[in-house]
Image 1 (cartoon, rainbow, N blue to C red):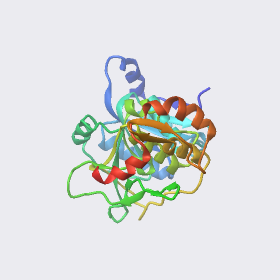
Image 2 (cartoon, one colour):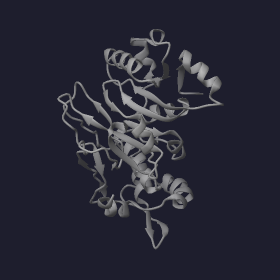
Image 3 (spheres, rainbow, N blue to C red):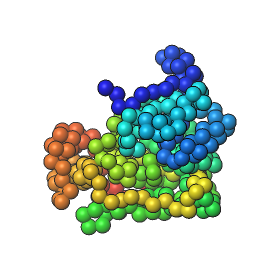
Image 4 (tube, rainbow, N blue to C red):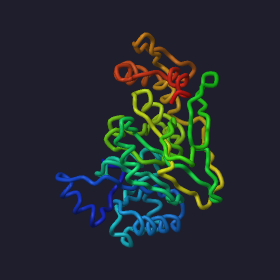
Length: 303
């Protein structure tokens, strides 16, 4: 049984009929993480300014408070029965959007740059990233440090933060998309099995997705061709505290060392999930991983 229901837009119903014959390039998924006013403002702006297929990712609890589905017949609503994780929302968007690329934003964000031509070129280029994360601006238009670089402190990963270059249009590598926001390649995203929904913290979900992508040979970038602003925030604070499923991340990320071109499996104590080690790392991941986390950290400066 599905964990969500879908209220299809009029355009989406017709599009699903014709999707066997053609496919749009972009769609947008709005995470309903703010107020009703945030969501209404976001929908009005996207519908007026961006010619994209628009989806709202919300919950029954939110829709009971403000059911606006009838007010926006041109929008598709993906409504979860219960509270869920950011990653599960995004996985549903990938399953339902039927476009080559999908852009994930929050209802309390404003898009200030979306260079479709530049983004298409980057997504289809030789580096072919899984995702391109946006430059993020505060309410005072200050650039936030949203590039993440891998760093290992003791037994734990502690990504370092840097500001992206806003003077030049270029692709800058980032370990993962902050707040899971970004433009995703739908096919690559699903090939990598999307976000791990057995990890319950947003930070660790995003970290897991990013590290997995890099270890499997796929990249993530930040570019000024894509930018968002938080009208009511002066900074971003990631909740990096321990969460259910955290050991799943560490087991997948740290259990393999690549030596002389071969992947060798071992335990990364104290963060060991025995089931993940036996069923995912030893049976599947060991045959797919192109590098290891230690090499990724050592070589990051070259990227």
